[in-house]
Length: 235
Image (cartoon, rainbow, N blue to C red):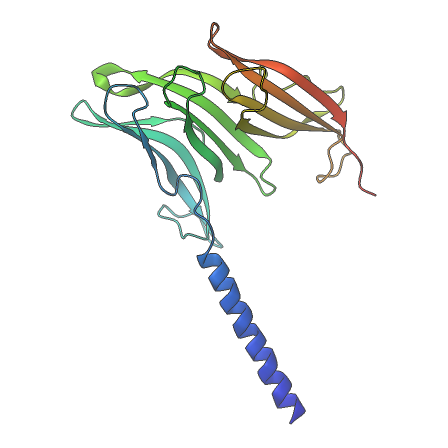
């Protein structure tokens, strides 16, 4: 009697666990750009569309073309589309990565218009690969949307700190917020880590945080505070 009862309770536990997991999956929040963003990015009076485009799907077999299953691995890129010049203009903004951390349309240059696109993509088993940009737009040939300027691109030599001697860049991130009351508008916060050759994958030796403000005269971001620290080692 006891053994069959244990088996029934075990089966019931698995059923309940599966139901809970299924409910949790159904309640997962949408990923950035699952729903495209629409805004008049180039100021021509018509809205453009910012979207994530799947480029390949990955499973136990060989890569397959999109569309990818909702819970599967994939590569994606960020692009802007514009119905113009009698067709559709597709403007690619990123390289292929694996998921999007955020995508927002903001007034980062403080001209009173929310027309700049900010986004961050990540890749790799530990999501250490990163590409982040803030882009402004203009009308181009045929009235089609074109990049006016990349206001910020990370990580690049001009946007990451000087590496401590004997280290390499390990990971980075970009955040956008009103960090300082000293400056108008939104500021940027970049954070990166640096590893020595013998550091374990989990534990880089150094970390740096840098804050950036937008210079309206130079039309670019300038660092106004940065700090390099030695990270604690695991006990």
